[in-house]
Image 1 (cartoon, rainbow, N blue to C red):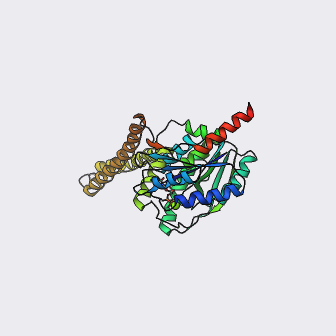
Image 2: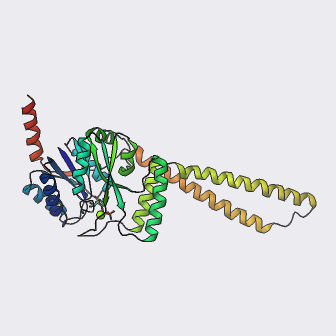
Image 3: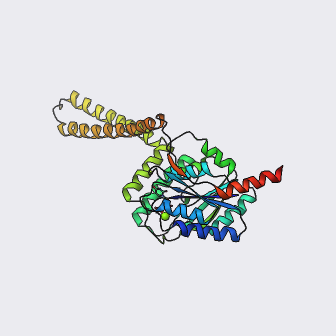
Length: 319
Ligand code: UDP
Ligand code: MG
């Protein structure tokens, strides 16, 4: 069975549409499936819509978070509560075309354990957005040692890969990169990012920057090494200026150089403050991790009607 996991945050208009579209495509391709909606603390009627969708279609089930925990947590909750032999994760705004699920499933049947959805085009974006996304993915790609520039959260994972992901103890999770980091036999399927038909994107510029910084820190220690590099550069400057000052002293022009002193103080002061900030950020992340708080809290969970029945059938067949 294929479990399709759909994180949803304020997507009341998309729930029924997503459930119907995916049902149509997977039933047409004769793929047994379940749909797991994860309501990430929506402020609108998303949860009620999920309950209704579950009533209409026995293959639909849902999890309700106690508050908004973010998409990464929602995807993990979906994986932890899915019962299929393979699990697909996709956006519930249908920007990830559900027809691609069929191709992914066929690749999985041929033995691929991780099927990555790769963006053929990145959809409509401003030049600045494209440039900063480019920089972000260059840093992440270096850390994971895989080209991530076209990576997306649209993936299909075999049970083994899902278990490997669920075994990760860290709280700060970056699903897109972790699913490459775990390895396994992988394949990729290209897709075009679709236009959003209802509602709006949840990402503002500020939240995107926060997202980028958080994920770079969770995957790489390069920013901290930059502190060392900055230190080395300042040291080089210290040697040169030191020699110059000594030369001045011995030739008897030692009073000059007030500007140099001011500049040095300013430059060193800012480098030290920025470095402390970078190290502080890592310490904050360590602090968050050692608290071992759960990634998410579930307030309600729908019964899995169809899945249980299917599992029961399978057990009967086996015995
Ligand atoms: N999402 C979520 N929690 C959040 C923000 C978003 O579960 O805090 C879900 C959202 O419902 C959607 C997916 O993540 O299914 C992608 O969100 P969105 O469409 O806003 O992002 P974009 O497509 O613009 O990158
Ligand atoms: Mg979207």
